Amino acid sequence: MDVRARGTPGEVLARFFRLGLVSFGGPVAHIGYFRTEFVERAGWLDDATFSEAVALCSVLPGPTSSQVGILIGALRAGPAGGLCAWLGFTTPSAVVLAVFGVALHAALYGPTAGGSLPAAVAGAFAGLAAAAGGVVAAAVLALARSLCTTAATGAIAVAALAVALVAPRLGSQLQWVPLVLGAAAGALLLHREARLPAEALPLRVPRVAAIAAAIALAAGLVVLPAPAAPQSAAALAATFFRAGSLVFGGGHVVLPFLQGMIGPAEVPAQTFLAGYGVAQVVPGPLFTFASFLGAANGTPVHGVFGALVATIAIFLPSFLLLAAVLPVWGVLRALPRATAALAGVNASVVGLLASVLVTPVGAGLVRKPLDAAIAVAAFVALARFRIAPWIVVGGCAAAGALAAALSQRAG
Image (tube, rainbow, N blue to C red):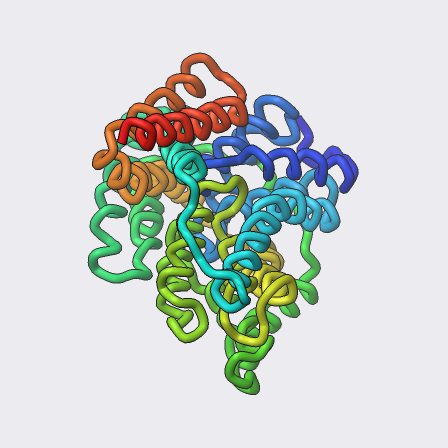
């Protein structure tokens, strides 16, 4: 198959918008959704090219699944396709979280008083969170079948899982350690079995454009915060630009990272946690949590404008990073044992993503038997019976709402 066969930006936008409406489960599940949609169903690219895109994006900071989506869109329809892939996949969750942020801001700072959610609504949120566990498990299983096909790659994945569970205890920004160790193990163990496509990802970035992207990224990190007045649009943009540039490990990492960057004066802890909960249960990239924070914060830059500033600022580094790195990637993959190293990275990605099943997903489910049962049912429906994800997720939300209503009536 020729991955350079071109589609249209509109085609890319439509497919990614539909995925943005149903892709529950966080970055682990998103990669599984992408593989099912674009490798198995649409045939836009083959498994080897998809695996290389995942490997590249996994070693970059920022939202891994969004970056993979941008690459897929660019492969299909050029730069406009990459932009449309991001717009389609990001817009649904960004709108939902921004609306929630606007409403919460009005409740906190406007004339209305706050209150608790109805039991059925809280139960539906719990059902969605439980469904995410099943979705993540199904996605990890599908990736393991594709990327861990030998004893050596399986061993690397297991080792990466163990390291990924320990690394955050040593430092909040050590999520890259399993990937580096996986690359080293791959170079040593997989040089006889690893294969990459004969050609690198067929995306050509002019050298001038790559240099300009690298300069813009550095300027955003160094220059943008300098003139920013406190509680200004520039200050808000600088905060989220840094988060999008420096966070390794994807969406599950950006949430606590942002909590450390945004003080309680701008976003009270209770508001932050409310948005954190909703971000876990909406479809699409977790980085759209920025849309909520931009809308809900207590500074003059809030509401729709604040959501736009925060959303653009946190995703912009991904475009700059990909443009800057793609020309170098073609050189790196040609080095001796580069193919084996990338196979090791791919295997370690499976372990890294599987660690999410332990924490935070598994840690939350083991304390709630009903939620654990919903998660298992979602996994069986997806992995065994291949029921459409939106049906499974909707059923889990309904089950959570029903259970909460029955519990309230019994109480």
